[in-house]
Length: 263
Image: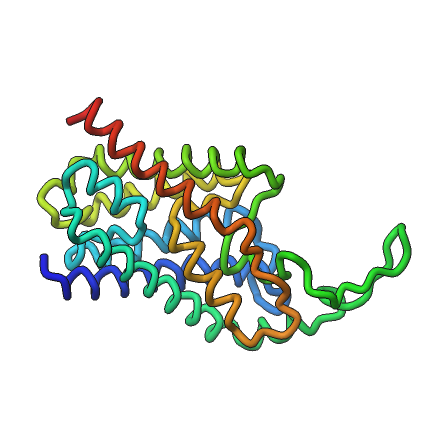
C-alpha cells in the first residue's frame, strides 16, 4: 500500500463519512429541512450508513481506517506500520474538514434560515424574564451538526464514556479477522462495522453523542469555527479534548486487549 493510496483512500473515505454523518445531523437539526426533528434513530442509522459508504469506498485503497482510533488500534495489533500512522491521521483530518465543508454547502440555505430565525437566536421570554439569545453561547445552536457535546458535562465521565464506546468499536473491527493482510475490511466487514456503529449510537451514544473518532469531531469543529455562519455561537473548545483523548485511549486499549486475548 503506497503513501498515495493511503492519502487518497483516507481523505475521500473520511470526507464521505463526515458528509453523510454530518448531513444527517443537519437534516434533523435545521428547521427548514424535510427531516427536521426526525430523532435519534435517524441520526444513529444515518451515521451507520455513513460508515458503511466511506468504508466501502476506501477499503480497497487504504484499508478504510477513517478514524485515528482505528489506526492506533491496528498499529498496536500489528496490522499497520507505525511509520504510516502520521499519514493516516493527517489524511483523515483533511477528509473530515472537507466533509464538513460539503455539509455546509449542501445545507447552505437551511443554515442561514435556521441561524436567522428569531425562535433560534432571537429574544425569548423565560420565567426569569427576557433573555437576549443573540449573545453567542458557549456552544452555538448548530455546533451539534459539526461536533459532539455531552448532556451532562463531567470531564471524567465523558472521557470514560468515549473510551469504552471506542474500545467496543475497535475491538469489533480487530476481531473480524479481516485486517491482517492490510487489504481493509472488505464488503462484509464494512457492513458489520456499520452495524456496530449503529449499536454503539443506540446503546452508548446518549451521554456524549458518541464521537468514537477524533477527526470526526476535531475536523468539523475547526470548520465550524471558521465558517461565516451568522449567529453561530461558540465552538466549545473547552470540551474538544474529550472526543480526541477518549477515542485514542479506547483504540489503544482495544489493540492491547486484542493482543492479550485474541492474538
